[in-house]
Each structure stands twice: as structure tokens, then as C-alpha cells.
Length: 480
Ligand code: NAP
Image 1 (cartoon, rainbow, N blue to C red):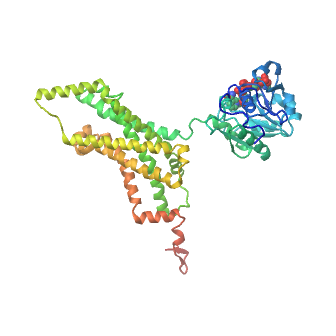
Image 2 (image 1 turned 45 degrees about the vertical axis):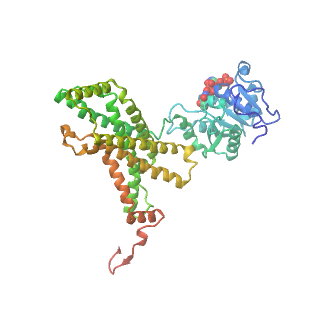
Image 3 (image 1 turned 180 degrees about the vertical axis):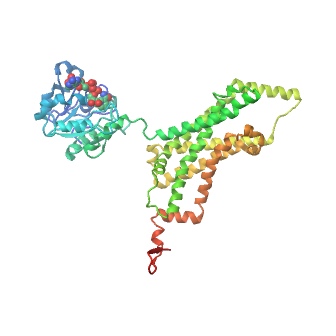
């Protein structure tokens, strides 16, 4: 680590560092440009006790925008004095530095620029900078940090700085600098990775697209089905107006169905993968692309399932607050009085509700545990066995309890023809199909004949290696 590092604490006072404790004899770190990024970077470098020289086209005009201790000079002066220079300009202005080629030869140039749109084919900004200054060593880095994050420093202790370069020594130097500023450098390899690094801040939740789409499609499918079956058809055929159910009751009926199916979708690809391995008798054949992608999105599917379950719990808690619920209760009480009925207690219904609620609460609790362990900071603290116990053991427990929650909701109504109004089954019947298939599939895989064979295949055993090959006279090789 460079001398003087940590002499000034990173935490506290980052926005306005006091008089810096920089070592005037240490080699200066240069910054070209005096914009937002440059100012934040200068603050942070200075706070780490480094000597900072900023190169500007108009140093007199911009000098007072930097804290005392930062030297603001001409671009040529900065290029001549510093060995590592951050190019804090927009790429459109790189060519304006062409006159400094001589001073910048042999120096390390750090390209901090970002793209404005995703770049899939063009050369990266860093590669363009390297082409402009072939005698300098270009390192891509620090672009994933905002000016604000730089100014505040790595308060959460986990800020990563992605870096890459074709010059190994230059890359190490910049990595050391990033570390001395309290950030975590991540080596991304050669300068050809610069495009990925420039694209990194532009992605919008890249791994969430398909799981999110899946959740939205499921939600609307169940919601529209419920709407037809429970609202539109009763209105058209019987004249019952229950449109008031749309905002709360129908949403609350749909959310648990989405949650349950999504949870089943977390475990189904694992079963399909196991089935394929059993069928092929080897683990050394790649899975189809769609299965690979499905396996990779299990965490997101699980978290969305948890989100829907949590929303269902919230909606359910709010159900009694609605005016419609109060009116219904009063009407039922009034009817009971009119009929002279003293008690409406139904033992079976009471038990159904108690079990239904209890399964629901436990399922949500287990799902919460799964969601917490999917956080990298928690997941990383578990060893492989603990992680697989939580994600597989507890995961299947959550799926089983959620299925029981839905089954107790349905109770014997699944076998009541009156529930199949307009020849349409209730949604809870549709929703438990996939989870039941997944749970049965898991039970089947637990059978000794399958589980032992699968365990052997996963340890590297292959069926075809154990087949006996022999050659019949006048025939090609045959396999038994
Ligand atoms: P900025 O505030 O607009 O500053 C750019 C600097 O470039 C100006 O201060 C100016 O410095 C110089 N400049 C302006 N016009 C010029 C021209 N025509 N020719 C030559 N130099 C010119 O921009 P910034 O926000 O600091 O961003 C600088 C770079 O950092 C960009 O590539 C950006 O993608 C990257 N970056 C920024 C952030 C952020 O949060 N701001 C985060 C990550 C990466 P002088 O007048 O002193 O020469």
C-alpha cells in the first residue's frame, strides 16, 4: 500500500476533507479534466494522503473548485508530472489531448468513461483511447463508481472497481491505487473486456427479465381466469354484481397462486436435469440451453415467489378492514337472527381455517429464511452443506407446506361439483397441479434405485463405460 494511506480516515468528513496529509515527495497522481468525477476523485485521492495534480484547459478558472492541497495546473504540466493519469473527460474530447502525446508516452492512462447506450459491436472507449495513445498504457477502471460514491468513499466496504488492461504492470498499479482508496479491485483481464466494463453500469437488472416476465404472465393469466369465472360470468349469466372484488379480493386470490407456481418452477428444472442425467447415464453431456438458463434463474424465481407470498400475507391481513367485509358480516348476523339460529359454529370449518392459517404462516417463515440466505453476504458465510440444506431441504419444505396451505384452503371443495361453476375448475385446483408433480418427482428421485444411480452419475460414473462391447463375425461392433 502506498505510504500515507489510512493516515486520513475514509469514514466521516469525506465530503469536505480537512487539510490533506499528502506526501509532497511521493509521485503525483494526475487527473485530466475538472468536472464532477474529477473533483470527487481528487477529494478521495487526497483523503488517502496522495499527491494530486489536476490538469485543466483553464486552471485559473477551475482552481477554486478543488480543495486546498490539490494542485490545479495545465494539462501539459499534469501530464509531465504524474505517472498515473485519470482521464476524466468525455470520450468525444479525447482527441483534444493529442498534443500531449509526448508527455503521456510511457505513462498509465486510466479511462473512467462510461457509454451512453449498450455497446455490442463498437470498440470500447478505452480501446479508442489506447489507439490514440499507443505509447501509453491504458487501464480501464473506476467507471462503475459514481462521482457521489467516490466522494463518500467505500462506506459499506464492498465497493468493487472493475479493471482491465493489456499492460499487466499498469493494471497492478491501478489496482493498488484502488485498494489504497478503500475499494476492491476486480481484475477483468485484457483491454478487450473494457466494453463489458463500460456496459456494466448500463444494464437494468440483467438476470431478472425472464423471471419477472414469468411472474407477470402468471399473475395476469390467473387474474383474468378468476375475473371471468368469479366476476364476469356471474354478472352476465346471473346478474350478480361483484366487481368490487377486483382491487383487493381478486388480487389476494391471485398472489398465492403465482407464489406457489413460481416456487414449483424453482425446483422443476433441478428435477428435469436429474431426469436427463439418469436417462443419458452421464453428467458429461451439456443440458439444453433453455434448461441451463432456467437453472440459472432459480434464485430470482424464488425471490419473486417470496415477494408474492409476502404481498398475499399483507392483503390477507387487510381483508377485514374493507367495508364489504363488514357489511357481509352484519348481513350474515342479521340472517342468523332472523332464522333464530343461536350459533353458527362449524367445527370442520374452524379446523380447516386454523390449519390453513398455520400452514400459511409457517410457509412464509420458511420462504423468508430462503430469501435471507440468498443474500450474497449471508450465503457466502454458509459452507456448501449448509447452503444446500437451506436451499434444497428447506426449499422443498417450503413447497410442501405451501401446497398444504393451498390444499387446506380447497379442503373438500375440490370434489364438490358446485365449485365447478360454468364448467371451470377453481384456481386453487389448477395451482396445486405443478407443485404436486414436482413433489412427486422429488419423492421418486428419493427411491434408492434412482437416488443411488444418480449419486454415482454425479460422481463421474458413466453408463456407456460399463457397457460390454463385442464384435460379431461379419458385423460392425455391437453393443449389449
Ligand atoms: P464533466 O463534469 O462534464 O467534466 C468533463 C471535463 O472535461 C470538464 O470539466 C472539462 O475540464 C473537460 N472538457 C469539457 N469540454 C471539453 C472539450 N470540448 N475538450 C476537452 N475537454 C473538455 O464530466 P464528468 O461527469 O466529470 O465525467 C467525466 C468522465 O467521467 C466521463 O467520461 C464520464 O463518463 C466518466 N464518469 C463520470 C461519472 C460521474 O458520476 N460523473 C461516473 C463514472 C464515470 P476542463 O475545462 O478543466 O478542461
